Length: 163
Image (cartoon, rainbow, N blue to C red; front, side, top):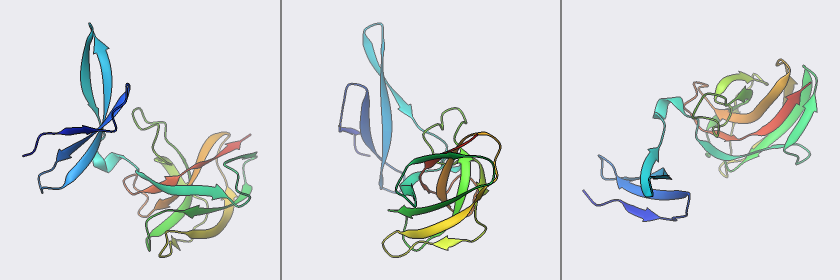
């Protein structure tokens, strides 16, 4: 087994490559914390089945990243840079689970449009519309790869505030 190597190091965050069981390399984030003047590297990770990795970006049809409206507001969104030729659903969800705040639409994803959309060869999902029927609050809108179990990739979300 090879020794871990630090790459892209910074004062607060470093990226480490670690050889896996199958000989492949995976990247893990490290948080550096000072304890009594000694820097301690703490691996920051999550259980694979409980995370929604972010791949690609979501956009509202007008190119904006945030909107507001009442329950039932109709939206239109598209995505770019997602995994090619995979099934996705446009969903509204949150990412409030402790330790998962940076994940996309992971908690309580609810489809906005019942149709499953296939991304094309370039990872593009065309305009998809639907009504967002969620309670007041801040909701993430993203394209989540199916099945909607919180483990599949989702596009970087846009925000819809239900007033």
